[in-house]
Length: 146
Image 1 (tube, rainbow, N blue to C red):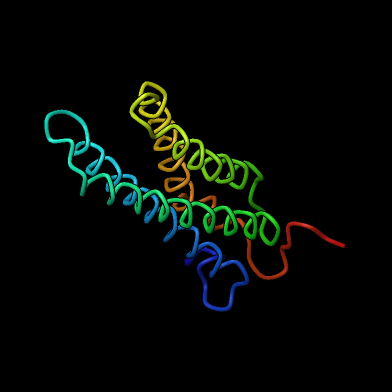
Image 2 (cartoon, helix red, strand yellow):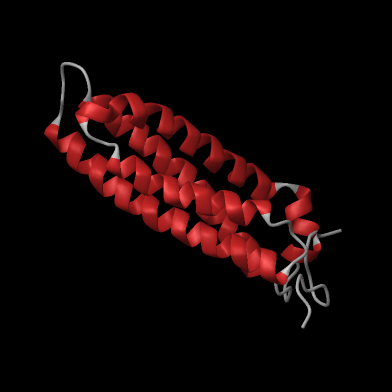
C-alpha cells in the first residue's frame, strides 16, 4: 500500500517530495563544500576553490531556505511535528553564521560549525524519507483547523 502523502492527488505529496529533493541536494551541496574547503587549506590554498566554495555557500543558503519553507508547509498542512521545520530553520540560519565565520582567522569555529550544519542536514534528509513523514498527512487530515 502506498503511503498517504505519496499517493497522486494528496495535498502533501508535492511538499514532501520537495522536502526530500531539497534535503538530498543540501547534503550533496555540503559534500561539495567539504571538497572545495579541502582544496583551500594546506599547501594548495587554491583561489579557484575559494571562489567555488563562496558560490557553494550561496547555493546552500537557497537550498536550506527552500527546505525550511517546505518543512513549514508540511507542518501546516499535514500531521507532521514541528521539529523538522524548526531544525530546517536553524540549519538555514547556521549557513549565514558559517559564511560570517569563513575567514582564516575564525576557521576554528567554522569547521565545527560545518559539522553541526552537516548533522542537521543529514537528520532532515533521513526524516524526510522516514515512513512517519510519508504517512503523516493526506486528504482530510489538516494539521491546523480554523
